[in-house]
Image (cartoon, rainbow, N blue to C red; front, side, top):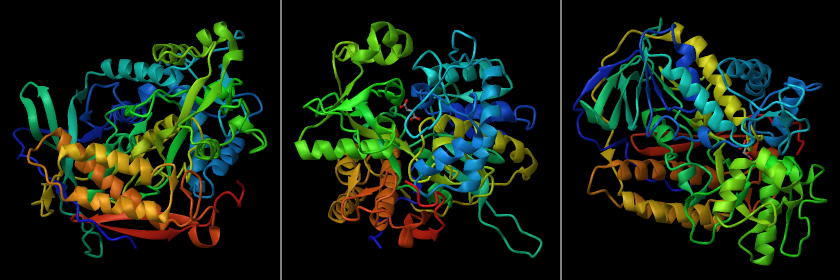
Length: 562
Ligand code: SIN
């Protein structure tokens, strides 16, 4: 067991200077958050959406490839299920996957009815493409490669047409307020339950600075943890706030070690940090392929799907070749797609690549893996419930069990959509009476905002694509040191850094304990998948800043296929 760090049991923050009330607070404004808000409308009285930046600043906006669902001729939910389970490398929850694939088609049709303009073929059919790990064309896309932006646009338009849903932007969720647990028929008191949350709002009139929202339920839809690493496809807001807040409040984090590294992220040089340009897998779906400096196709002979193998297989093959050659990137060759096709099918990627001095029509694109998606997160049941009564989670912040050790391409938007609909079905009937927040006895703390760069570099170099016991131990030493770097000022940089540190520590612990290679978790010292010992999940819990990691065995869900 790795040595445990002492982390803040709650974030240091000024006492709330303002208060407000809502029945349900939704934290996050991507596909998961706004779907939950729209579906809860009319079922609960007062809905408040809070978002850390502006409504479209999260990851949904950046999704390129699309949204997967069995909508095409000959495709079925069972085939989608099979591909999802294989990609998940035995670590998916089979029931959750069945929910995803069975409810997915209707959920996507509903998104279309809401006004999302997906691309169509000349015959007027929904245009469906293929991405890594899919054996069928089942990825619906919009604006060529601007699927997320179109979905986000349609959802924001619907929210703006719903004046009864209140929105507070520039609002960082700091911590949950917890009240006494419910007492059951046998007189047993349950765990502390949601009574509200504290927010830090930048400049919303009277609601400025730290305030308290009293509420009966919170739906976390706050996205992932990409900023834990130096290079990521995720936007700046993805600092793991929702996962850290949930952990501090008593929720369980599951499968954190399964961080997906997207194989084809444009390489911008050794000093480039933060959000990097994604070159969608759909480019390979349309025929692009990976080559090394010699022009050799690296994916041929590695997997039956070659360049469209599941993402972990492609990322590992790229990394191996990079390590063999000492080169910082490989190349994606998509020149044969031609100018007209590039302009019509991938206008956003084309413009972005050109803005960085590469013309994909005539030049190879330099690519390397970068952090893309957290397959784990706050553990939920099939209805989005967490271990904290009144706290629900959906989308990338959640671990519903659909992704296992490696998310299948374009299943993420779908997960947010499907599980938010489910939460909206169940939550209204589960709302309990208002409860007063109890005195918060957790130990407050904060690390300095300026630890961020060292944290990210440590996580990228020691807990990134390729992991080993010595590297993970070194990461533990650095994280321990950073935990002692107390903040002198209470500000957003320190709150985010503390959340990043909290999630990094939990992730590194789980990665150290999983002594095998499975899906996106790649151990140099344990190169094989080991179902005899590690079929199951690492769960992380926290008690006043001290985390515990436990292993929950579960039978492999893919029949050993890989
Ligand atoms: C991509 O377009 O390659 C990303 C799709 C995804 O992450 O599902």
